Amino acid sequence: MAVLQKIREFFVSQESFEPEAILHPAPALTTVYEIRPLTEKYLQEVLRLNLRCFVEGEHYTKHTFTYLLDEPNCLSYRVVTLQEAIVGFIFIMTNDDGTGHITTIGVAPEHRHRGLANKLLNHAENALKKRGINTVRLEVRASNTAAQNLYRQRGYSTVQKLENYYNNSENGFLMVKSL
Image 1 (cartoon, helix red, strand yellow):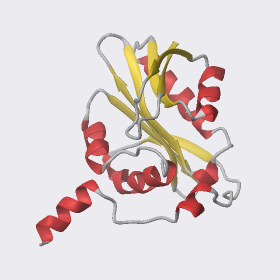
Image 2 (cartoon, one colour; image 1 turned 30 degrees about the vertical axis):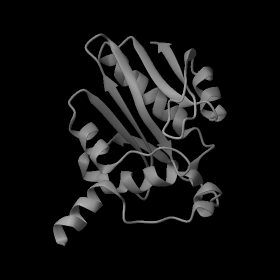
Image 3 (tube, rainbow, N blue to C red; image 1 turned 60 degrees about the vertical axis):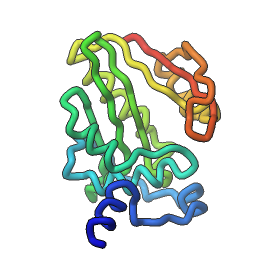
Image 4 (cartoon, one colour; image 1 turned 135 degrees about the vertical axis):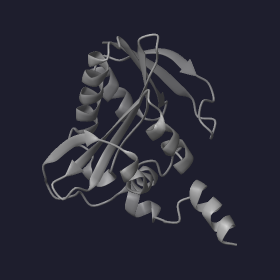
């Protein structure tokens, strides 16, 4: 029985969240934020935050995050508060052809509208430039106009509509930026 429980824990978080509290949380107190590397040491905290960031969308499994954190061609960063709480994250795969792929970016609902996604993107793009990466791409839900607007403001262009891209058959957009 213990083996079966371990297998369940690998794929499904045992924590549950009230969707209404996640979708409409009270804003967090104003604080100072810092961007730091994200390592496997923070896996459980990122898993919990990931579920809160993507309540109505697709969120990564423990298996996916473990793969990304172990992958030598993946860059990962976290946003932390003064109290060391992780309130945002980004994962970027780098390819030998000089391109980068932002696979996921998330900010805790109570810390949104503070420019944290913009700071994560800026940090990631600078890290990619230092590695000689000249193009970055990402996928975004067709319904996520806030994210699309942020990406456009940062110089990303929509290059392709992705029909039925997400598990719920929602369309997506492929966006690209030259660094």
